[in-house]
Length: 190
Ligand SMILES: [Zn+2]
Image (cartoon, rainbow, N blue to C red):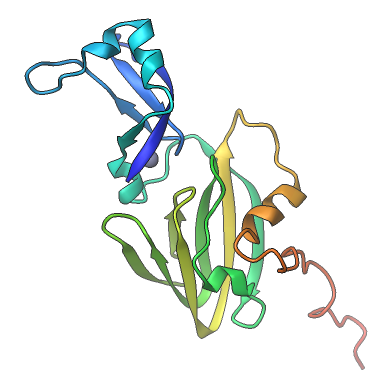
């Protein structure tokens, strides 16, 4: 899939690496006749490519970039409490990766990568979700799952409110997924 170039940095060999909006890095070498990118050699040339798209096969393979940390976890959800917005096509926000983790039972996730991913996860399995790519979750009747949100370590801490918006993007009327207390607790039941 196509991703925007948002920056460049040189590697140890002084080859240029493009930083993509999806948080992947990709070498952009000028190595004629195999790779014809004379623009990468000049500051002006690199600057002219900022904001332009480049193919990111790592996103299509849903390979999560290194160095990300979990900034928030939504859930656990069951088949009954899973926000309906997650069952329809929705997206994780720009600059944030998602990770669906199945704790019990099973769930199937479809992701509109190229080619599309369709994977059934069982207890203990997880699937990375690239930013800004439509995906949808279907669950077995018996399931417990969480959705983690990950960002680079150097990003400012994210507030609960912000990721609640991420989760409910596709469904503005959806209440934020903060069912933390109550319901399942019955400490004094006689
Ligand atoms: Zn990517």
